[in-house]
Length: 251
Image (cartoon, rainbow, N blue to C red):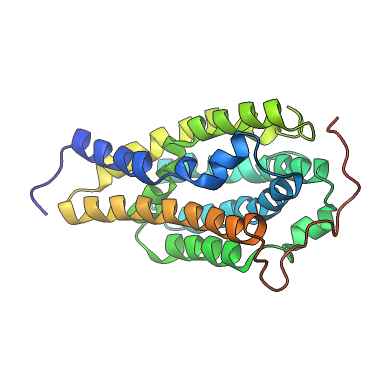
């Protein structure tokens, strides 16, 4: 390592991680938004991604307990409110369940997470553990995948609405709500990282934390590809055609 990076150089290094490693570059994402996924592959993606969505507020609550500044906690708390909602029937998790509803899954089955891939569980649990045990700086830095999420959300929404008759703007409401939240959160987190990474070692740890989070998201799509595109289902994973209602067009 050479000398301390300037704030601008650190931001550029973080954005370079996204340009090279974010999961919009994964072949499953390209398959999804280009209309090549089968109905069952979209079902599997939504079912497995639910576990990630459901664990985000748990991860965020863990980080919240480690932030010592009152204003930092106020800002971070918004993330939990966004996902859990401020009342029953509200929030990002509820909107994700609306998607799995539209894909025919009973809610009890989705919430149980019994059919998710073992690699999904392993990757998400590793992310929660990372945020629990690493420094608050690293935990916050790992959230900076939100810098890159607007582009993937735009591709996913436009592509899915264009190619799949079993989704609608209503069932994809999670994605229409998320960009302004991600923008707010990533701007705060980026400033936090640039302010608190005061040594080159801390800067490198922040960069590595973001790489780790990109690897988590990439690993989840790798698992989906292996199980549902290459059809190498592991034991206990959801089997296409089971647990779901008859396929119909989205309302």
